[in-house]
Length: 447
Image (tube, rainbow, N blue to C red; front, side, top):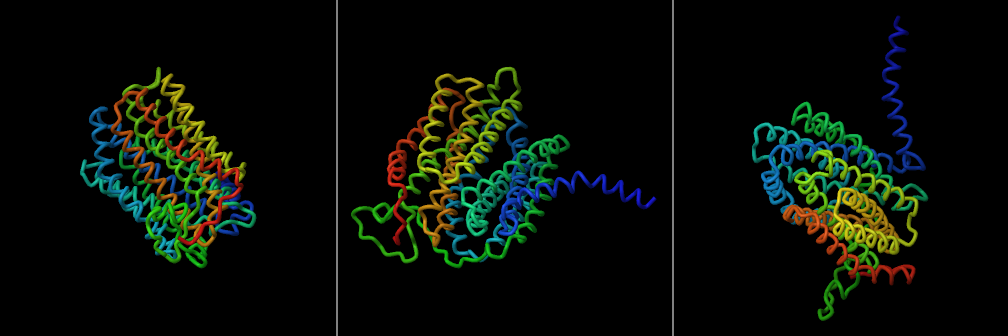
């Protein structure tokens, strides 16, 4: 009898334990387990799952629970109270973490724990309608972006032998995307039970992430051989052509190829933030033909997610092959898609634009990573990586702010989006192509 009970128990546990072993095998493959990269992939998956739970709860509370006009005002208030301060705080996060290199695991654990506590505060605010929702949402946003900056700084420390930075980042990103795709429908199901339940789910997930952060290897806390980078191309860009350069020992510029690639990526990240908010309101007011607002938004979100995943996979396959050419090409591709969608505005083209934007953003970001790995000295590579991520996060915030204030006119909105992408492409294409012809940018210098 006891043996039968044990057999039944093993049979019931097999789907879960088997899945867990399969995930662990995938994340720890090709030396990622020995280097600690596998642990980071799992931690990033936990991070993505927790964030999407909070997103589901906030979207239902701030966006879907009230009429469109009121929802727009409430989301505008959300942006003003949360994202506006974030634009001030974000540039501080990178330099602050540069000063605390020995506490990266603690910083990631702190970001997880903070979001766990804030999820409970938001759950209470959702039930009472309290304004605590907005400062708590700000805290979640800052903690999430802070985690992202630290994670960017940690990846170079966990590269397995023979791994490029691009390949490692693609694995980490794919882990987060897969977890988000799994957690999103679970969050929606919890939301159907009650508005607090996705937040309770986020609390549990982030508590697990707090403990998982400390499972990373101790070497991620080591700052041996590291220094601080400046996101400038050379002394002329940094100080101005008519000023006497001020010696700042230990600070290094990152080179022209990286700065141009960063500018192109900022344009794509701006587009991502813009489309997120602009299409959220546009499709609620004017859903895709024959579909509800919720289904329309879901289709667009899935298109963007699939494009992002494909871009990440293609980026891992291409690795560091002509990253400047890749960036110029994908930004031009997005520009063409945005112009086409603006002129022949329609449901199919909107879905295509979001897919192309997701694909191009992922591929362009991995190419930027490749340039940082190629052109930035190892001494300041971790700092350059973290600071570039902070700048991209701020670009997303500005894009979202523009999306929220735009009139709900598809032709006008996508024309503005195309104009911004065109400006980013024109400002960076020549420099990137010149760098590609030279084969490699000059090594960064002491500023």
